[in-house]
Length: 418
Image 1: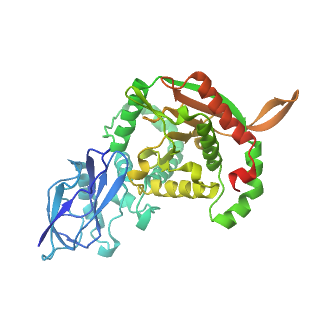
Image 2 (image 1 turned 90 degrees about the vertical axis):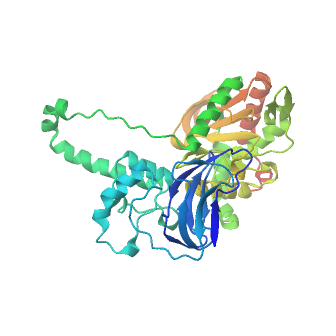
Image 3 (image 1 turned 180 degrees about the horizontal axis):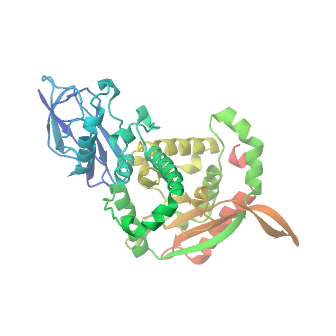
């Protein structure tokens, strides 16, 4: 019996998707539930499992093809018998992978079949192609992803290590290299297509800049009270809840307090209307191998610090493995982005439309400040609050940021349910 392999049903906000990489070839045996291909939307990468066991008799849509919800991309014959996977080159692969497999086939023929080829995540594959890694090199990389899959960070570590070794060797022959530099210099260029996520990020950032009247106000916050509170309770907190007490949950609580005080900050523009939201869905910017994603903490006002920390840890882990769902990345009434984890001292965050404001957190550093006429050293963090001036006045924006600052500088442990 022939069974259609269809694109998963996408959300209303996702018009189409791109087929990234077929893991099976025509004529190969597949098991039910086995991942056939990665499907990339502008939000997440989805795995498409085989609906039935059988033979993949026909691939209709190949790597790089744009597809829509419920579109048929292949067929499986449940009664046929197929062959096991091998390292052959077929038309369902991208030109880059064809070249890699073609040059690698001879090198791995003497390896046991059960050793198999390493599985690369989409971002890892692009990075490997950019650095011209062959399959022999890729096979030496230890994957940190699920089921040993190679993530972008794994490839990056390998490339950096390779570069370090190369630079050491180069230092030994630098005089000869300098002498022949004009002849050996290489001025190459690489053209790599943007991923759907990167294109979507670019589109939304341009949309935000062109449709909203973005203005940013700044303030500084003394983090000593939060640091002391966290130090006092972190061991007990982790024992009780099974998750570490970080700083982001405090910022989420402080933001919710400010949004309740100034509802316009939690509103959005829809044509000539202002839509006030009586719920608090806070987006948390998280880095992933595919780029920046913003999963949403729903009803953050109803959650304890522990529940917020659990969600953040869950989001971070699944973002790394590309397992966030479309629904988790859709919506939100306010966002928080933390450039401080990368060492940023100050920035002007861009609003995530249709939201009307965003808070930027930065690195906490010991700095001299004046208290009661004396210069003292305190752990200070610079906050940046970008807002849509079409509906938010400067006074409301400044007072909202002051409210966030005060909630952080004067926390009460019962309030935070520590």
